[in-house]
Length: 111
Image 1: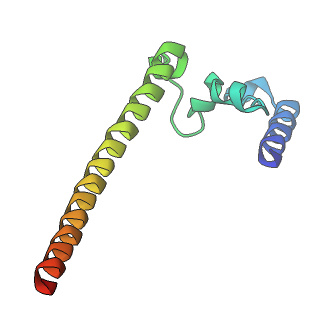
Image 2: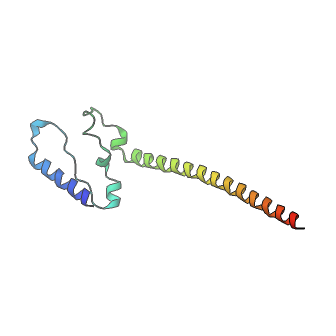
Image 3: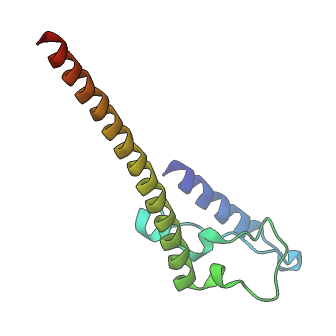
């Protein structure tokens, strides 16, 4: 929270010093609550990294594209988790097999 407040204070300072002849985009203050922050469209802007564009890319302006990107990332994490769980399940089956074999061996040797 302190980082967001400091960023917003710096945005206000820049806005007060801004001159139109500079022709550079100003950063916009960010919401300090989580849900509005997650949905803030200007959070994904990279105006300080790349040069100004004639046409704004869809991932930057279209809320549906932004939600699609988030959904795609979530789906990728789900696939990764499914692979991890499959490996864990295989390891569990192997361990159970070794334990069962050890028990059977112990039972046959004691008879």
